[in-house]
Amino acid sequence: MGEQASEPAGKAGRKRSGTAKGADAPESRLALVRRARRINRELAEVYPYAHPELDFRNPFELLVATVLSAQTTDLRVNRTTPALFARYPTPEDMAAAVPEELEQVIRPTGFFRAKARSLIGLSAGLRDRFGGEVPGRLEDLVTLPGVGRKTANVVLGNAFGVPGVTVDTHFGRLVRRWRWTAEEDPEKVEAVVCSLFPKSEWTMLSHRVIFHGRRICHARRPACGACPIAPLCPAYGEGETDPEKARKLLKYEMGGYPGQRLTPPPDYPGRPAAPSAADGADATGDPV
Image (cartoon, rainbow, N blue to C red; front, top):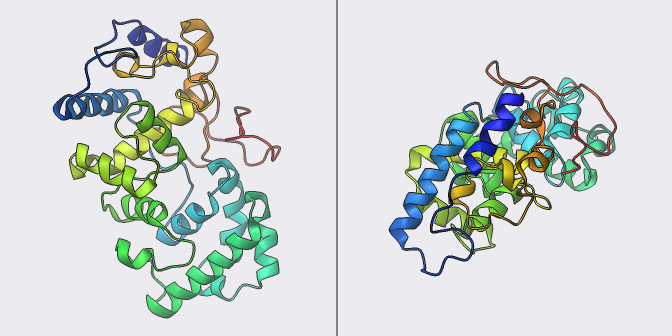
């Protein structure tokens, strides 16, 4: 763990490029594409194990878990879904759920009444319109209650191998910090980012950027001094630049803590999360 934490700090010490904060010349489209793709390559070295941080065994479980993940942590969802899928393992089972009973099972994820309505509605849609199977097309997925483009892209990219960019709060925040786009609307962000990268990179790019946002480039206190892409970042200096202080801000496996999954992939370098913990925070003490 110590070696992983010290490597970004070393890279961060390199001389920053002309895109650094305070640079005078506007960045050309070609320069932006090159910088964005270099950031992606750097992140691929730091997070070769990047993956969806929701536990799932099939497309239906991933769809449900992604809907539940709104406004809460993946860790809290992962602690909730084992009991949920034990009780409602198929769309048919969930479509027939008593709303109040389903609400109680998913209550720890927050907004449980609205989420229960979405889960019952999408399950009924799968049962009635798609033969009980999760469809593998975006245009079909977004017709289901509670399923927008973000959720659809998560399911398509990770359950069906269909490339897509997942614009969650972490992704949108980082690409604006990196000045890939100034757009706030997730669909516009998705369109801009897709134009910067070949389609084959879209899904893994999403995982890497989200991993980086959760581990190093935090919303309130980015660990700039421990960041492997600091030389490429126009927002360098918004967070802690001292390497030692920055290392103390690292989350999950980068800081020596457990991850969000209860059942992580075999090549994950950190520890799995505990099956249960206090509801107010994840294993690193970070509420988001």
